[in-house]
Length: 194
Image (cartoon, rainbow, N blue to C red; front, top):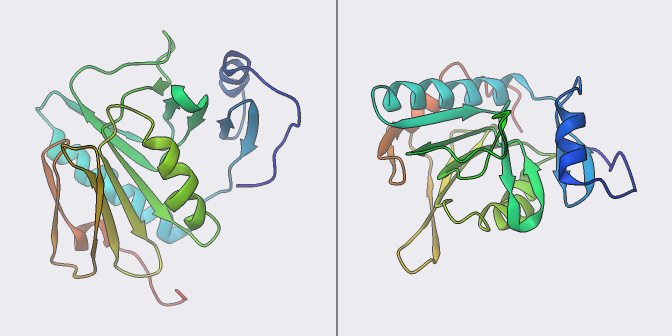
């Protein structure tokens, strides 16, 4: 993410109207518009693999997955964010009739990069937790085969688990999907990864 583009307050409706005409994606953070940086080869491969695996697993079920072109609305924080991927089962709660922002994701995926890792782990995770339907957060490293899965239990507490073995199968309870970690890293190149 770059510095704030504007220092003046912009309403969510002004943002959504301007975002629909914008040439590049921008997040909306409680009145401020923030530009987003482009991704790397590894980031793109991992994101594509996640989407491919989710799409296959959710086929013929009343569930949908979304790519980073779809926004998530965080009403309680007055934000719009572009997760790398997200999914839900059941009815979709769209922000408005244009259907380009979803208010009820159940599972969100972020691919970590050096420039976004801290924000993904802290600020974004804190904001996503304000969404009542949200119950799983999958973080994927782009520097090595490594995943962290955070799941909300019945008491509302969040518990995390890390995975590094490519043969590990990660079960996403909210959408009842199991993903093999190695499949999420297909064609990822760690040659120059630090």
